[in-house]
Image 1: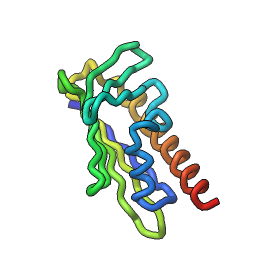
Image 2: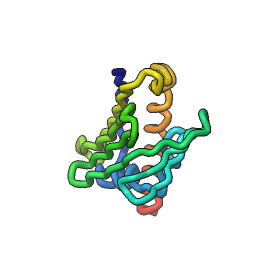
Image 3: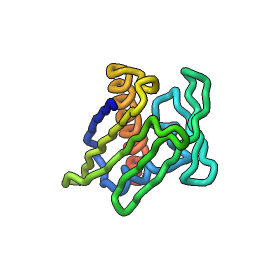
Image 4: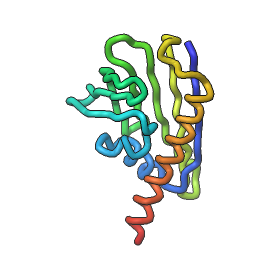
Amino acid sequence: MTEYERSRTMPAQPEHVFDQAANVGQLDTWLPEALHVRAEGLPAVTVHEDRTDEDTSALLRARPDRMRLEWGTRDQGSYTGWLQVAGIGGGASEVTVHLSFFDDSHDPGGATVRDALDTSLRRLEQQVRLRVDHAAG
Protein backbone atom coordinates (compact mmCIF):
# COMPACT_ATOMS: atom_id res chain seq x y z
CA MET A 1 0.00 0.00 0.00
CA THR A 2 1.19 3.49 -0.88
CA GLU A 3 -0.15 6.62 0.82
CA TYR A 4 0.08 10.31 0.03
CA GLU A 5 -1.06 13.35 1.97
CA ARG A 6 -0.97 17.10 1.33
CA SER A 7 -2.41 20.07 3.20
CA ARG A 8 -3.13 23.71 2.43
CA THR A 9 -4.36 26.66 4.47
CA MET A 10 -7.31 28.54 3.02
CA PRO A 11 -8.61 31.99 4.00
CA ALA A 12 -12.21 31.02 4.74
CA GLN A 13 -14.37 29.51 7.45
CA PRO A 14 -14.25 25.71 7.42
CA GLU A 15 -17.97 25.49 6.60
CA HIS A 16 -17.45 27.52 3.41
CA VAL A 17 -14.49 25.38 2.37
CA PHE A 18 -16.32 22.12 3.04
CA ASP A 19 -19.45 23.27 1.21
CA GLN A 20 -17.36 24.07 -1.86
CA ALA A 21 -15.38 20.83 -1.71
CA ALA A 22 -18.48 18.68 -1.19
CA ASN A 23 -20.55 20.24 -3.99
CA VAL A 24 -20.81 17.26 -6.34
CA GLY A 25 -21.85 19.48 -9.24
CA GLN A 26 -18.62 21.47 -8.93
CA LEU A 27 -16.05 18.75 -8.22
CA ASP A 28 -14.55 19.27 -11.69
CA THR A 29 -13.59 22.83 -10.69
CA TRP A 30 -10.99 21.59 -8.22
CA LEU A 31 -10.25 17.89 -8.85
CA PRO A 32 -7.33 17.03 -11.11
CA GLU A 33 -8.28 18.19 -14.60
CA ALA A 34 -8.04 14.63 -15.96
CA LEU A 35 -10.77 13.35 -13.59
CA HIS A 36 -14.49 13.89 -14.03
CA VAL A 37 -17.12 12.72 -11.54
CA ARG A 38 -20.69 11.89 -12.50
CA ALA A 39 -23.14 11.26 -9.66
CA GLU A 40 -25.44 8.30 -10.25
CA GLY A 41 -27.33 8.29 -6.97
CA LEU A 42 -25.03 9.15 -4.13
CA PRO A 43 -22.97 7.66 -2.75
CA ALA A 44 -22.49 5.91 -6.12
CA VAL A 45 -20.49 7.89 -8.69
CA THR A 46 -18.59 7.19 -11.88
CA VAL A 47 -15.12 8.65 -12.30
CA HIS A 48 -13.84 9.16 -15.83
CA GLU A 49 -10.08 9.43 -16.23
CA ASP A 50 -8.92 11.18 -19.39
CA ARG A 51 -5.44 9.62 -19.19
CA THR A 52 -6.82 6.09 -19.64
CA ASP A 53 -10.21 7.05 -21.15
CA GLU A 54 -11.80 4.68 -18.63
CA ASP A 55 -14.76 4.94 -16.30
CA THR A 56 -14.46 3.57 -12.77
CA SER A 57 -17.31 2.86 -10.37
CA ALA A 58 -16.69 4.64 -7.10
CA LEU A 59 -18.31 5.81 -3.89
CA LEU A 60 -18.33 9.38 -2.57
CA ARG A 61 -19.63 10.21 0.88
CA ALA A 62 -19.89 13.64 2.42
CA ARG A 63 -19.89 13.78 6.22
CA PRO A 64 -20.83 17.41 6.97
CA ASP A 65 -20.88 16.83 10.74
CA ARG A 66 -17.16 15.93 10.50
CA MET A 67 -16.38 18.25 7.53
CA ARG A 68 -15.00 15.25 5.71
CA LEU A 69 -15.33 13.72 2.25
CA GLU A 70 -14.48 10.05 1.72
CA TRP A 71 -14.20 8.19 -1.57
CA GLY A 72 -12.91 5.01 -3.09
CA THR A 73 -13.28 2.53 -5.90
CA ARG A 74 -16.48 0.52 -5.64
CA ASP A 75 -15.72 -2.88 -7.11
CA GLN A 76 -12.02 -3.58 -6.84
CA GLY A 77 -11.12 -1.72 -3.63
CA SER A 78 -7.79 -0.58 -5.05
CA TYR A 79 -7.98 3.07 -4.06
CA THR A 80 -9.42 5.26 -1.28
CA GLY A 81 -9.09 8.84 -0.21
CA TRP A 82 -10.43 11.51 2.07
CA LEU A 83 -10.50 15.26 2.41
CA GLN A 84 -10.70 16.84 5.87
CA VAL A 85 -11.42 20.50 6.61
CA ALA A 86 -10.43 21.94 10.01
CA GLY A 87 -10.83 25.45 11.35
CA ILE A 88 -7.56 26.99 12.51
CA GLY A 89 -8.91 30.27 13.85
CA GLY A 90 -8.99 33.78 12.46
CA GLY A 91 -11.45 32.78 9.74
CA ALA A 92 -9.01 30.36 8.14
CA SER A 93 -9.08 26.62 7.51
CA GLU A 94 -6.65 23.82 6.83
CA VAL A 95 -7.60 21.28 4.19
CA THR A 96 -5.88 17.90 4.12
CA VAL A 97 -6.22 15.36 1.33
CA HIS A 98 -5.10 11.77 1.84
CA LEU A 99 -4.88 9.04 -0.81
CA SER A 100 -4.24 5.33 -0.34
CA PHE A 101 -3.42 2.97 -3.22
CA PHE A 102 -3.84 -0.70 -2.33
CA ASP A 103 -2.93 -1.86 -5.85
CA ASP A 104 0.39 -0.59 -7.21
CA SER A 105 -0.97 -0.68 -10.76
CA HIS A 106 -3.35 2.18 -9.84
CA ASP A 107 -0.61 4.34 -8.29
CA PRO A 108 0.65 6.84 -10.88
CA GLY A 109 3.76 7.55 -8.80
CA GLY A 110 4.78 9.92 -6.04
CA ALA A 111 5.70 12.99 -8.08
CA THR A 112 2.53 12.75 -10.17
CA VAL A 113 0.27 12.29 -7.14
CA ARG A 114 1.90 15.06 -5.08
CA ASP A 115 1.62 17.46 -8.03
CA ALA A 116 -2.04 16.51 -8.57
CA LEU A 117 -2.84 16.99 -4.87
CA ASP A 118 -1.10 20.37 -4.71
CA THR A 119 -2.83 21.51 -7.89
CA SER A 120 -6.22 20.31 -6.64
CA LEU A 121 -5.81 22.10 -3.32
CA ARG A 122 -4.77 25.28 -5.12
CA ARG A 123 -7.80 25.02 -7.42
CA LEU A 124 -10.08 24.42 -4.44
CA GLU A 125 -8.67 27.52 -2.76
CA GLN A 126 -9.38 29.55 -5.92
CA GLN A 127 -12.99 28.32 -5.92
CA VAL A 128 -13.36 29.11 -2.22
CA ARG A 129 -11.94 32.62 -2.77
CA LEU A 130 -14.35 33.22 -5.67
CA ARG A 131 -17.28 32.12 -3.54
CA VAL A 132 -16.27 34.12 -0.46
CA ASP A 133 -15.41 37.24 -2.52
CA HIS A 134 -18.71 36.95 -4.43
CA ALA A 135 -20.71 36.60 -1.18
CA ALA A 136 -18.93 39.62 0.34
CA GLY A 137 -19.20 41.83 -2.73
